[in-house]
Every structure is written in structure tokens, then in C-alpha cells.
Amino acid sequence: MADLDDLREGADFGLGIASSSQTFHVKGAANLPWGMKDRLSRIFNPKTGKSVMLAFDHGFIMGPTSGLERIDLHIVPLIEYADCIMCTRGILQSSVPANVNKPICLRSDAGTSILTELNDNVLIDIEDAIRLNVSAMAVMLSIGDSAYEAKTVANLYKAVDLGSRYNIPVMGVTAVGKQMARDARYFGLASRLCAENGANIVKTYYCEGFEKVAAACPVPVVIAGGKKLPEKEALELCYNAINDGAAGVDMGRNVFQSDAPAAMIQAVHAVVHDGLTPDQGHELFLDLSK
Image (cartoon, rainbow, N blue to C red; front, side):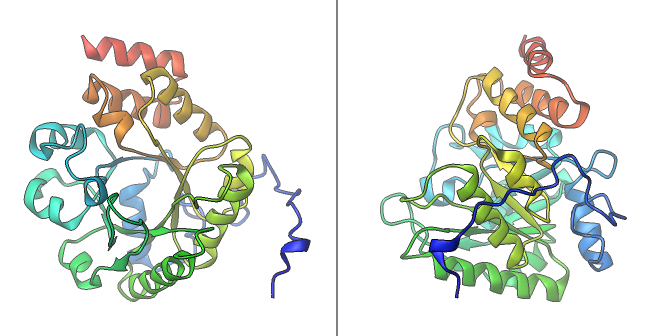
């Protein structure tokens, strides 16, 4: 059994040293089957190895929050600028045109809302993911939550079992335990647990020391945008995360709650894929906002 009294802080992360034996542009995917690689290649640009994901799955716990009142009016016009979209099956089938031709990361667990205790989730049927032709499934993991940690780990493990059967990658989404510090040690632990349990992608938060989180995770890490920030700060978040080893961003509120959402997602795309600095990205945002 693991001994919490001897949980030693990692020190040798090999920062600046590329992963060895990488013959595929997605980290940790070199030995996966062709179908897995094909789906991951839809999400992560083969030229850059990066991805800009547009998340608008918030409604499954928050309802019609600001920016998500009308998916057809506020979100569909943004999809062309994203590499991948993350949403629920209900919104996908009711509001996203089938001809957008973008890879889908399907929110594949559901349960409680913000009105009750979160994280008491169950998995949706894998057949829905197959019928919807998704490129990945997203499952939340609540590390540090004594009530739901084991259940959410089991959900992830089951999703990976089913995804492996049909060559559909799984993204582990790290929720923050109420009693856990939002630091590199926590996010490093949560991200590594996702990968250890078979996740092909990890979504977590940026923090000080994030380079250790990314280096110690053997699969791609994409960062969540979190709460709405001023546009320049959000672009700085993207820039710093990519420089510290993130394979992309999965942003929602920092895009669809912007005063100019289409301009913002294009600026994010330029920072992630073209290496624009935050200042250059903000200038692009201002130009496109006119």
C-alpha cells in the first residue's frame, strides 16, 4: 500500500528532454492501434502536435450560463476556428450541424448539477459515442474527493476499457478536490493518475510549476481555461502553458464569454499553433474585433 508519510516530491523530470522513441506526433500514442491514432490525429494537428479545443459542455451542470443561452447563435459560428469541440450528446444532436466536419470530444459522464453535490456521475453508453462518430470521450476524475474519488476513477477505467475495444481515445478531466491545493503537486498527481488508468489525453489546470505536471504525464496535457479572464491574460495563460509543455488548450468561458468570441478563438489559435506572443495575440484579437 502507498504510504502517505513517504510520498516524496519528484525531482528528476527531465525538463527540456524530449520523450524518447517518439514516432508519432501525439505523446504516448506511438504503440496505439491505427484507429486510435487516426482519431488523435483529428484532435492534434499533425504539423504542430497541438490542439485548440472549444469546450461548451458547461450546460450539463450549469444550464444556460452566459454565452451558452443559444448554441446555434453563440457557439456554432465559432466551431470553424477550433481544432476540436467538446460538448454533450444532447447539444451535439440538437444544435451542432452535422456538416461542421470537426472532431468531437464527447462529454461521456453525467450526474449531478451545481444545485447539489457535484461528481456523482455515471457513464453514458459507449454505443452513443460510436453512433455519433466521436473522436474522443471525456470523463471527469475527482482526485482528493473522499466521497467520489473511487467512483470517478472507476468511471474512467470503464471508459478506457470500452474505448480500447472500439479505438476511441479517452480524455481524463481533472476536477479539483475541495480540500486539495491548486498546485503542481496536486495537478501532477491527478494528471498522472488519469494516464496510469489509461487516459489518452488529460485536461487539467495551469499552475506554477506546470512544466513538472506536463513532463511527468506520459500523454498529452491540455489546459482548461477556467473562469473568464481579461483577453490578454487568457492569451498569456495559453502562451505560458504551451511553453511549459502543454499540448493544447480546451477553452470555453474565455472564448464564448469574450466581447468578441470569434476574434478571441482565432487569437488563441495563433498563440497555440503559430507561436504568437501574448502581446501579438492580443493585437490580433483587437484587429479582428473591429
